[in-house]
Image 1 (cartoon, helix red, strand yellow):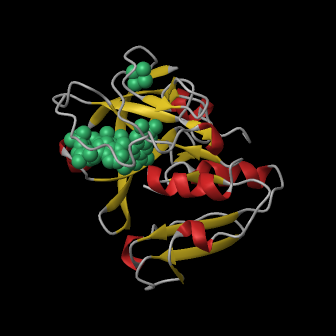
Image 2 (cartoon, rainbow, N blue to C red):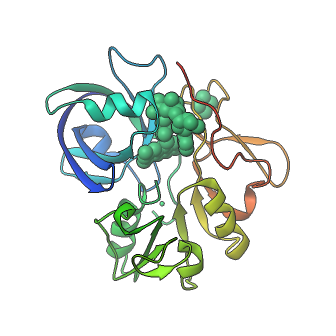
Image 3 (tube, rainbow, N blue to C red):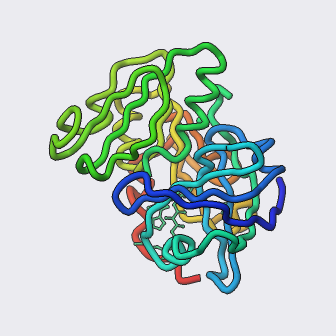
Length: 241
Ligand SMILES: Cc1cc2nc3c(=O)[nH]c(=O)nc-3n(C[C@H](O)[C@H](O)[C@H](O)COP(=O)(O)OP(=O)(O)OC[C@H]3O[C@@H](n4cnc5c(N)ncnc54)[C@H](O)[C@@H]3O)c2cc1C
Ligand code: FES
């Protein structure tokens, strides 16, 4: 794990209100695996760092993808090129094959391709404008709730069966993935306090009973191992810290 004083080097729009932020983080870039995340803090900023999956690596830079959902993500998105953030990572366990619905998939798709695996990229959103324009893989399938692009319906319904299914996105969607492909590997999202296994703020209820820490044993799980009925489908309160 590395603590990097990172300079923001770029920001680009990839879907409605969704941006990719690029930052210098040499050690993290050289070690990160698909499905791992970084915990980002800045000053002045919230007391707690905010976790983001690593979306892509470009040389000594890492990229994260985000939308503003609260004060922390708004502040992060308002930063300019040259501003600095503190970046802790890589954290958590990645997908065993190596991995906002696309965040950890670019790295996973790249790694699968490097192993000679044929990749089908399935991406779903409310409507065409919300789909991330950047894709990967050999085949691309789009799904939108309103039918404005690709298949009308969910990404899970639009997906073909496959030998290995990797998924990230809202927990409710991951529960649907688990129902169809119990062996899928899914990256869950929880609130996180420390991101390093100490505060127990990221508890993931397990099907066998008990809890795991998403930041340490996760955030990637075998889909059937999570007690989806007990995992909040969406964190229901803002973290004012
Ligand atoms: C391992 C991991 C990887 C993540 N990767 C990404 C990523 O790549 N891109 C990205 O945009 N976000 C990602 N998130 C979610 C991101 O960390 C939160 O959206 C962020 O911390 C919110 O901070 P905030 O201060 O803006 O919002 P807050 O003020 O804390 O909350 C504002 C609103 O957002 C909701 N919210 C907060 N956290 C989440 C969450 N985890 N999921 C859904 N809704 C939430 C709250 O219910 C609240 O209504 C990830 C989370 C985890 C645990
Ligand atoms: S976020 Fe603190 S233990 Fe996981």
